[in-house]
Image (cartoon, rainbow, N blue to C red; front, side):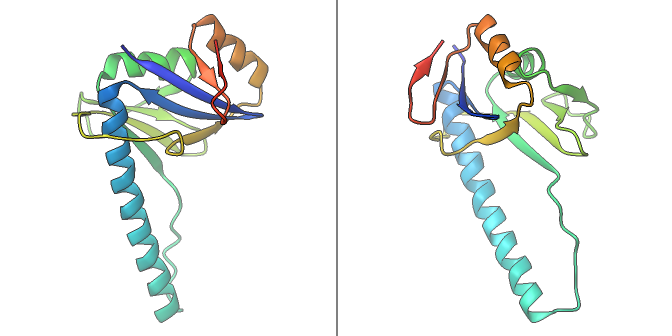
Length: 154
């Protein structure tokens, strides 16, 4: 059974997709991603400090989430969050890509989720200009959510 936990912070949504397997897979993926990003950041900062004439113009491109059930996850991101599915340029049927606007994307990747552990501190945040409308949609779909402090609401 999948539970999608939304942490509401005024106009931001912090989203965790939970089931025991996905939870563990997501944390390992995020931990690896964080370590990779920290290493990449170290390399970029080191390069910048040693070679002032180089500028790579790095910008954020996408976030990728490992999911245990691609169809259920895709349904959540499309129907509840309202994300628009975009062309998966890898043509891999075990991946779904979504637009986050401004050339930013979210990628869902089907994967073995038995090794992931995470907490709500591991998340990505989306801005919701119509937060009340979004929250009503969440409630209509019977998706439990909580405050950052852990107060659960349905």
